[in-house]
Amino acid sequence: MKIFSTHRLKTFPFRYYATLTTAQLPPLSSVPCLQKLCGLVSTPVGSLDELESKLDECGVCLTPSTVVQVVNHCKDEAPIRRLLRFFTWSCKNLGSALSDKEFNHAIRVFAEKKDHRAVDILLSDLRKDGRALDVQTFTTVAETLVKLGREGDALGIFKNLDLFKCPQNGITVSAIVTALCAKGHARRAEGVLYHHKDKLSGVESCVYRSILYGWSVQKNVKEARKVLQQMKSKNITLDLFCFNTYLRCLCEKNLEKNPSGIVPEALNVFMEMRTYKIVPNSVSYNIVLSCLGRTRRVKESLGIFDSMKRAGCRPDWASYYFVIRVLYLTGRFGKGNQMLEMMLEDGLIPPLKFYYDLVGVLCGVERVNFALQILDYMKETSTGGYGPVYDVLIPKLCTNGDFEKGKQLWQEAEEMGVALQCSFDVLDPSITKVFELRRERNLKDEDSTKKDSHKSDAVGYTRKRMYNSRKKGKRKPKKNTASS
Image (tube, rainbow, N blue to C red; front, side):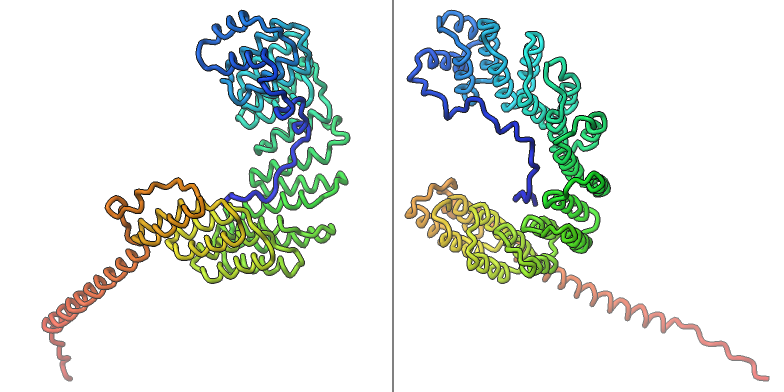
């Protein structure tokens, strides 16, 4: 179950820089020419050639700042190909007046929209015009191409950065390694590291952490341990992020191959962390609890949770979530409710997703009465967001035959002003089909199988007696031995 991410890769910070965000743009109504251009680009009617002819006829005084504003205003509204045609038309009209800064900004916008074809076209134009590709743009393009499964193209751009007038230094090496490792391409990232060892000054720690994360994505414990050893030999400080990344890799691998080894090997990692004077935090314990929950190991989950509290690490709402979920899935509903009450007594207020998932789990195991209790807990701690819970509970109650309770919940939701997505027809018994509960069907099946087994045993017993009696009747007399 991968619902809550217990840690994320710290990617290279260049993508957080911004040139001109939408919040800084002037309103369209205050600039008539801007409003006219945005209207032409955003209208999805007509071909791209017609758009270009209309842009030629509009007679707007075009400036580099106007181009950037149109791109920012239309990037979420206009069809991406019309926006690309507008920008290429602007480049032809402005020529060198459009600086490299505006050109790089447009490339980043199309990269963020995940349009690799538009990025390829603009990179080709940038190279033909002799413009320079800045490091921030390369970082964004590399991340996008790797996410789209085109890591070969990202590496191709990196190898030919000199053709784009972009330096091949520690920053660009770190950017391509981080982009590759974010999707688990650690082997290719190690190839980049091998050929550019002399350019890692100042970014060596970041590069090795990225490679460690890349092997963790692949669940390759052996290679991840090797990276840790390399970091030790190079006197790179092993921090909490490194150990949590390795711990995740180890637990995920054991979850597939050896679930009984999750807890012992995780405790060994905790001991190793303490030798480096690093205290495991809630993220460390949540990694273990998440894997134990997915393999339904209740006793070990409760043991890790108790050891977490004894170690002085305060559980967060995610820690409680993993334990409560595995308790519900294994039928320990009373203990799960006790843990939920304990969490609320500790002053932890979980997000709405916490309640949504638990209600879904309880409805999935046919325990709607406990799901109603979760709704009550939710009302005590939150002031809204009840709609998805009502949308699940009302149809579930009606399909189980409890139409009265379903109607009560519907009226209750209307009184609270909750907008429901489920249909009112679910409250009609003539429309909604009532399903027999699965556990009741299983009990009936077990009773019928027991009766059939008793009958077959009785028939088999009588047949065996008849066979034995016939065998006795046909028994041959013993031969008398001749007396001497």
